[in-house]
Length: 144
Image (cartoon, rainbow, N blue to C red; front, side, top):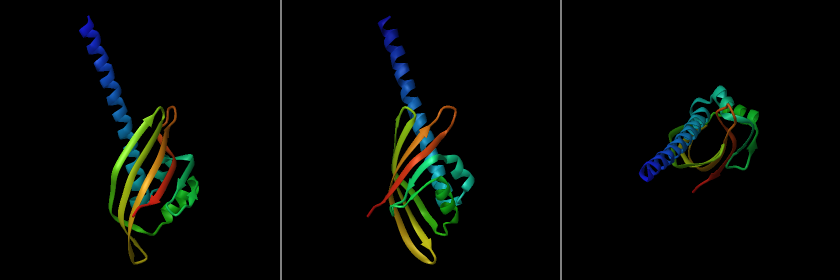
């Protein structure tokens, strides 16, 4: 009986760990979709679905944008990004809130001028009842 109880507890714990991993992967997929919509596709439909109506989107320059402003500027951005990479990605979930961090790297081309993008990014995602994960806050900082 004791062994059966131990086995059941182990299964329950394993299930909780796997479920957490599944949530983290869903958030990571949202981060990748956001990066693709902003840096590759400049896709306003995807951005509208990924961003909360109350999103606070902070750039490394200190500029803050609301949802409409962020989408408008992302779609109008003429800069191109190559060799796009996301490193050191972590996702921590507490209830219906996910805190994600990653380092974003890319080579840029803006009006014929090459550059290097290296940003530390912190994002807060929220999962509302009967909805998917939405970005509610994002802040970027330039890294050396």
